[in-house]
Image (cartoon, rainbow, N blue to C red; front, side, top):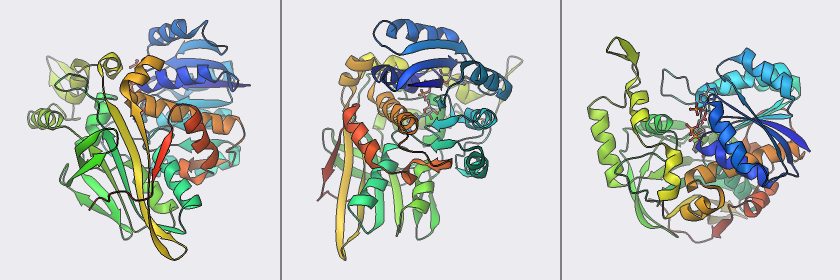
Length: 400
Ligand code: NDP
């Protein structure tokens, strides 16, 4: 019996909203609020009549704290699910603090003018959220999100200490375009064109973009090239997992994607430095986003599967142990169910589940928390129930 305000109505939000509407015993009433209200109205029209969840819509500029506070005071939700962009995290957290409403997101704050994401800005809210008696749940997508819950689950049930984690994110999907991104192009390109890094022996080791390449044979997908990237969950897992010596993150990319990206970089199209064009200031990367396919349009065209998970190495009862936890998700099955491809699906489902954990009283500790800080068991059960079943392998091939 809960009211939830969902901010954003893009690829990820659309899946999360479908899932909330399938789970109407928990999500009895939702407000979809985004910059472009017509998108919210379109989704409402599609879902109404097929769900018991009562749906409202509104337009909001989530960069504006006062507008957010007014909307929250009017609708009176118990929780705000932030599925806009990482730039809006702090303003939405400010509005939640002012109104004493729980907060959930899927990506950590990133200032618009520097492509650098880290938790320090959001972790600075810990005491304020504690004092207000509200929960701030950070990173409830797939990675971060499910990969972090997998780590907490492995720590709780399979290991006494975990020494090595390799997070492997494989998208074996084919959308038929020479170049397109599976989620917001601006955020995606900022992430993959940045320097790589991993955590080893208590410090960060930095690499050039795409410098470290490995091959891996993914169940359900096959052999793929994957590249080491910096990724936000490395920062919190390095603090929260006992005995950790090294954490790395690898993502698969096809040759066509990399060739296009290199070319776009070489000509300056991925730059976030504003330039003057015909008397108007534009940011090249934002212009590029405008000409690339909308990720939401990839759904009906994408075939194949994703396979995302974590390989753990550590000790149990004094013996060395290896354990792989992963989920395989089929793009076409996702489209059949919620009219989205698997990258949005694998993020939108855990976003709904994270909100459900708070609303149903499973996760209640006030303060700002990364998702691996909570009991993973109810979340793991919910993954199996709500469309992202996980598989285990006790003898996986390791990444060198
Ligand atoms: P989209 O670009 O498809 O959607 C973003 C939505 O936010 C749009 O509806 C957009 O409105 C809205 N929005 C943007 N700015 C504002 C604003 N100032 N005020 C109100 N609404 C705004 O992005 P995705 O759905 O692909 O991604 C959503 C989030 O999910 C991102 O933060 C992304 O980083 C994260 N993500 C996390 C993953 C994980 O595994 N943890 C994986 C993939 C994504 P409009 O329609 O007007 O543009």
